[in-house]
Length: 227
Picture 1 (cartoon, rainbow, N blue to C red):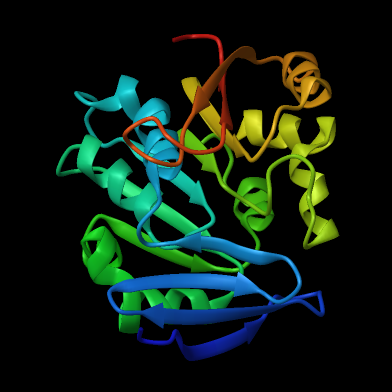
Picture 2: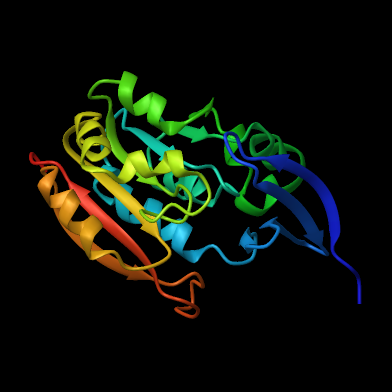
């Protein structure tokens, strides 16, 4: 049986954690030593669901503008591009510059090379920087950062899920905008924080396999009034 091939490594900024990119036949995976596999190109149903749910109200909207927090393997970005019109803009924020290069060099084919789409804009850095500086500029914001509201890898990510961070995110949305947050598990306290930040909240349970198999993942759809 062919062995997995280590293609590249990267250090997550502000941490000692290492990302390792592997290829096994036609599958790519990103692993953190000691924590296991973060993602792979064969199982991405919940990442696609994140974009489809967040962008459902934008199918016919002219000049829609959305933000994806966390490039990963590109499936959320690709799904957003699949929903939106030809005049849309999809801004993708990725903290680890090597992950952007891995998508371009190795694994972009699996998601359809979304970084090559002219509607895509890539921001290499912390998504919090965009949220703080953009004003009310997005029709949808999709967050797939760390492991969800219970940050496991980079403690700085906690800010995104605090009431302060959620208030800033709400201000970054246009009237009727949607914040969609991916999580590996349930979090009632986070759902309550979303409501205190002024969102109307709906919880969805999705599966990593498009056929409805695998662990339960959670997506919160938080809407700004005006929808």
